[in-house]
Length: 270
Ligand code: 1HE
Image (cartoon, protein in one colour):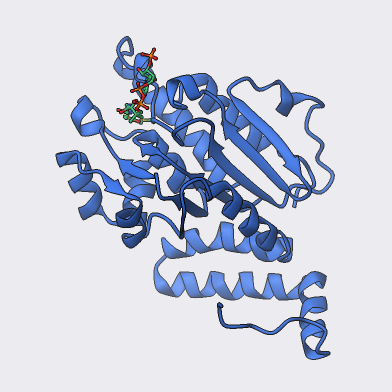
């Protein structure tokens, strides 16, 4: 999907709080601030945005994970104490810009979760298109207890993922969901054994990367937008998107392969 674009050479490797590695079509971005439990300061937020704007041109899927014991402890609270109201708004808008780039970037994004996925960490996870959680994962929105409010798109993305009622509970009471509860309420798409979330994310990424790029792009770009439209408009956009995807040579080839019995059938999960 990134065609001829080439990022500035060495840019991704020059990031300091984000480690970026590519393996074939999969690009892996690892929050690399484990001493602070991957709490996101301004630099890390900007590095995330930079990375997603400058993904390698052959990337087809991105994985986001966290180094150390936890996925992400949310906002770096040491940045909050000195901010005035204007700085607070700009700070939140910087998170929005970065997270918009993740959700509506060129490729599907899989979050590999473990340990704390809290505050802005849950907002980041909600920005991904798929979430894999291992047994150690837990979710919280301690903003209420810290006297602040979500500012990294949680009121839009977390509430759509788990519902306003559950989000309200988490914020008012400090409720913490463990991996099983988080799975039951739909935060994770996959729940795996401790230490296995990255391996599962890679397995899923390989499968996603085999899809036609335009089809993946339509899923990532069109589905969330259509979900926000009135049904009549949504259906019309669906028809357009469907026709565009079908018109792509990659789609024609895949359908021909199936009709000629060269493509796999849908099989029940074993
Ligand atoms: C931090 C942060 C942080 C850890 N900002 N420094 N997020 C929170 O309210 C969550 C706060 N963090 C925690 O509850 C715990 O740290 C964890 C459950 C995530 C991990 O516990 P643990 O025992 O493994 O680590 P720790 O000993 O608490 O933390 C290790 C260090 O990281 C320590 O610093 P040190 O200098 O004493 O070693 C902690 O102070 C530091 N640390 N989390 C700053 N969040 C866009 S709006 C989003 C709004 C929010 O995200 S609000 C929720 C913020």
